[in-house]
Amino acid sequence: MSELDGVRALHLGSATIQSAMRIRDPFALELTYTRAMMCFLLFHSSVRHMLTIGLGGGSIAKYVHANCPEIASKVIEINPRIIQVARNQFLVPENDERLEIIERRSAISGRTPDAADVLMIDAFDSNGIPPDFCSQEFFDQCADVLKYDGILVINLWAAIKTLMFI
Image 1 (cartoon, rainbow, N blue to C red):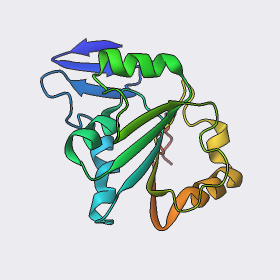
Image 2: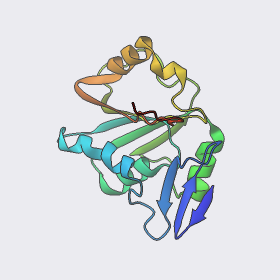
Image 3: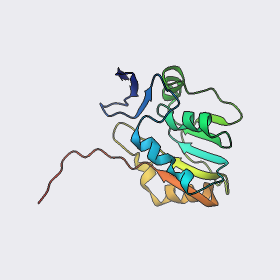
Image 4: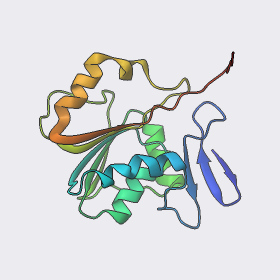
């Protein structure tokens, strides 16, 4: 974790910023990519249930909880330490009727048809996107948990080590 110019940042095993929070406005979306991920609201006007894989500093979970009272949000996080840091250092609220953070090893378990209007994948380890999240089986599971008109939002960030232009 680091703090600079009123912004607290979460780092997971590298210098890369995984999540950030402006201390004076903790429920705002500080990073551009989090604002971009919320663009699903432009395409689905009646979101009621959102499932998120990956908590990080909880920026999106906090934003939805504070600004979208019509959305019930469930977040699955595999690392109990991340949940603790998100709550203690990034002001993620405790579970209530609209926000449920679950510690679980498997991202998506079993078939849950028509469960989510939005499925958001924002999960990374120190090496990038976990390999389990790059398979046809995983994307089939994603389809199984979405409603018929549901939206899948995925953060495909990856570190680029070398650029070559010819």
